[in-house]
View 1 (cartoon, protein in one colour):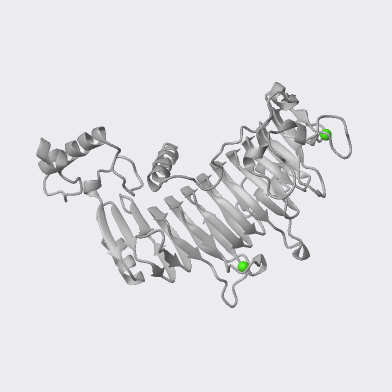
View 2 (cartoon, rainbow, N blue to C red; view 1 turned 180 degrees about the horizontal axis):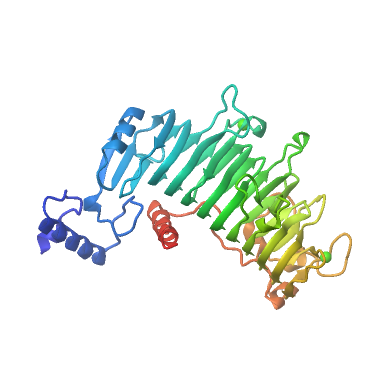
Length: 443
Ligand SMILES: [Ca+2]
Ligand SMILES: [Ca+2]
């Protein structure tokens, strides 16, 4: 037994009996120390059954995908792979495509996934430079008719020239199931992310910056938008942009959004006139109303009335959010609710709570801050531990001050310390991803 325990668990499987032995050895090792560090999407796959393939050209990448007959970990040498398409690949196991060295990444100019399932893209760069004839809505990475696709620790960026007026959409997810975007970074775009007609969409712990629009969600059936960090959402006002960090609407999907949770996102938007969470139907058909929306533990620091703005929904919960007007504000932010049948609004902090008749939410324990119209109520600064004014206040500054009115009411976002890109060792990031992926697969 000792001999088995010392064997690396990567030995190729040669017989059923040996495979069982390797599994037993793997279990024994796991009980002795931390589990093996494996870049394989689904938990429970022994490292011994994963084939590792090293590639350095687009042709080798395509060949490795086509040849895969079991769980495969494809390691890409650093360098540019151009425009990559993966179409009609639906195998009974997962394939990981990742940079062999996260510090010397493989770069794709474009990635198209069509009628494809069970891929994970890890530590890749997607450099989306618009070509002649491509408009600002051209996506760099797109999924269409896909299932079980994950992007983890990837960078999505346009031309990095401090100008977001020459960039397209970084990621467009469409008509797909179980897509996850985790611990990734979006920079320089017309729009960071668009999702249309999606089921089970998980967008977790990403950074969004230098963008004219954060994310647009159209027809999402069940999803989590959680612990993302938004800053420098900057509209092109000359082009009549209405910038939002997170927008939900009814677009060409023709569908309302049902069962979406927007949790613990931080929107530090003092740079420009950018709205926080903006939800409308944008469609005259009331059958398309949204339903079962949960907006909890988010922070908005900005200069627009539309801090959390929800219309045209059947059911809505708004709890423990913190909204503060940025220094030099145009408008102080509101929690605004119109045309929502059933709503609950509890434990929030905001300068304005605006309910358009006949909306009467079940409301309690909210802190209505003093504002420029109604100076009654506590000032924002009196409610928080840190400075909540000026340029780019730290997220942790928004923790509620003990003894304040908000503390007494139990109001305000908890403010997790790890909003945005995950901070930790690669093993810690991987462990977190595995937990979240299991949560998605359980749907
Ligand atoms: Ca640019
Ligand atoms: Ca007020």
